[in-house]
Image 1 (cartoon, rainbow, N blue to C red):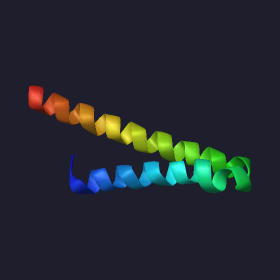
Image 2 (tube, one colour; image 1 turned 180 degrees about the vertical axis):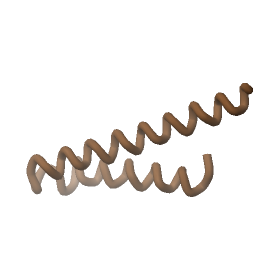
Image 3 (cartoon, helix red, strand yellow; image 1 turned 180 degrees about the horizontal axis):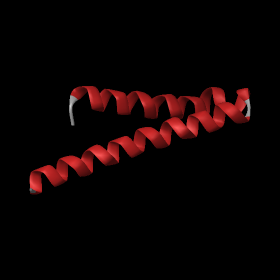
Image 4 (cartoon, rainbow, N blue to C red; image 1 turned 120 degrees about the vertical axis):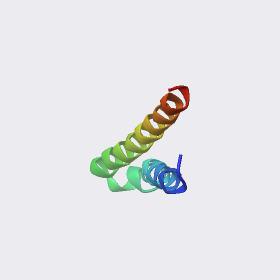
Length: 59
């Protein structure tokens, strides 16, 4: 995983967690859904990159 991809993943997941547990409960429903979306997108990107790298090493 490149440094840029790792940083983007970390920032996306961190923003999601911050909104879920920091601003989300105070701001209401839309902020909480945005937080969940950011976290899931970051996690999905991480899994996608890890699988792609694993397949590249195998082939």
